[in-house]
Image 1: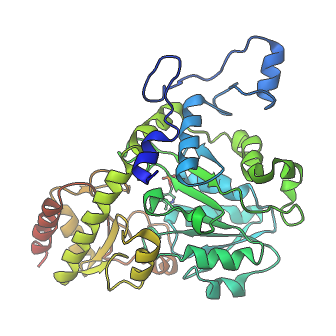
Image 2: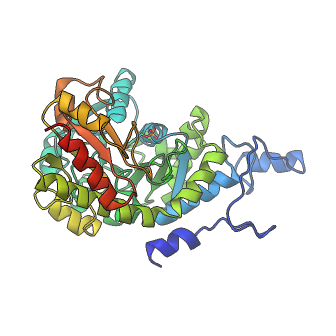
Image 3: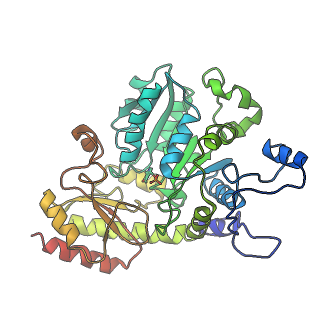
Length: 408
Ligand SMILES: *Cc1c(COP(=O)(O)O)cnc(C)c1O
């Protein structure tokens, strides 16, 4: 089954009782049982069924199963936001004293989170490029994970998943990949060796910018040896489901960052058009990036031949460079004027919507970052991040053309 067929037909969530063609919204907190004995069994995972929506909900369940199938994982857990997903995925495996190695070009919120983990004894060390050469000197006995984004938001660096996974697995270190900007339409990181995949499903998966959510998908392939990952001792018996079982029965249910059924439903509607949208978004982004390059505007887009990541875009993503572009019109004043003069693009802090969104990164999403962090993320005083939408290509180019004229 090709992606566009799989996304519709695998885990369709059709309701057998009524014939409803799309999953129902179980907008409810608790699920009644026939007896105290039955509730005891369901509550303690000894019988199938649902007890309480923080722990499990049929609508959320369909979303989790669908995304697990699309990403070629053994299971998935949905969270209230992308940030909750990043937090839960990592806290499931680390403890005080442990170290994580991460890309310096990560999403600003994730960098902020890693700073928040420091007082709990979890240290994050940064590499400027996620390559085995840069990772190797930072590895210690305490290194418990390497964390990256696949197409960095907003630096737009692309990681060679297979090469880094192979290197890490020889050292018994799992590879966590935030694949929000790539989506399973461009790549299934698990096929190339990633161990845990994370999405802010608020973005391309939802696709319409109508709700916040996140999801964690496990490959089931990493051996969480209890020698190195102490918390996994009592979960070894779950075999390839150990990571998901530990998370579901532990931190995830106890922290309570669960996904609302209504939002799971919106994601299930949105994901059906993921392939159509990503194809159009990537084609629009490629055309727009080429337009900027041809018109002397400094542009960063991994799908351009001039990008150092062009080859990886061909080999890993089948030639699609994703939906985000950054441009540098020359000064903060020019950036503001350009943004203000756009007619179709919306000024907003989000990505992965149907509409094109623009933001001046330094004054917003990177306002709390140091100069060093901004530089690492490829954010300069004049950087505009464009999240390309599904509008007509020529209209988009025309819009940017007239806005560029206005700053000349
Ligand atoms: C938006 C985003 C997040 C955070 O997701 P939320 O749903 O906003 O919490 C994490 N990683 C990446 C790459 C993102 O773009």
